[in-house]
Length: 224
Image (cartoon, rainbow, N blue to C red; front, side, top):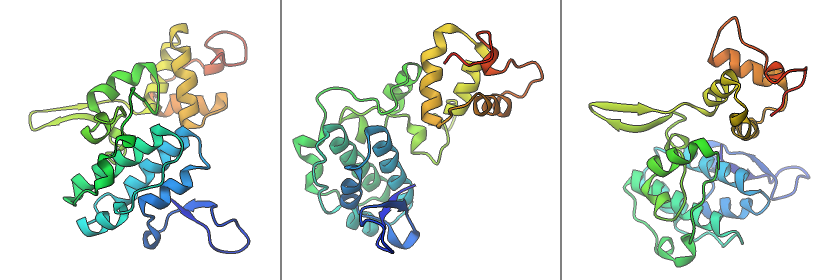
């Protein structure tokens, strides 16, 4: 989901609301909104903008990325905005603006926006070129209409599990070595209760003999 500013009622002008089809923000506007978000939420906002502009024609994309976004003060987000613009332009066969080549749009060290240890390899393998060449490594499925496909070839398709399925598998395995991954996945998915974790487990791996997440390590409380 992308973000737009609210201009109605008494809400502040920079309040964030879901985008409407007639109010797609330019990338420069998105950059201004990122200033009030932390890095994980900023990443999701940029991915949301990319989802909104996906499928748009070249002229629309060129207009949306023409203005160089102001630097945010976080070099990771500055590079992320350039990667998003380049990716959108490539898929719309649009011209790319000169600001994408500026040195401040490239990172000097690698950044994994969702830094889950078990997903780092997926980021290194599947990150689109516009991101990887700037030092940003993401799961390509974040950009593919939520389809977890990491390699697509006429004779071979490699699919990777979604965060929900990964969480279910980690909970089912109930290994102490997976505790860090479980905590991070719970945060990514916004789950803060045993019931919520149980719902994911039952929906992804429906079986009758699951232990409740809170009982995996003994007692009535989860040890995530």
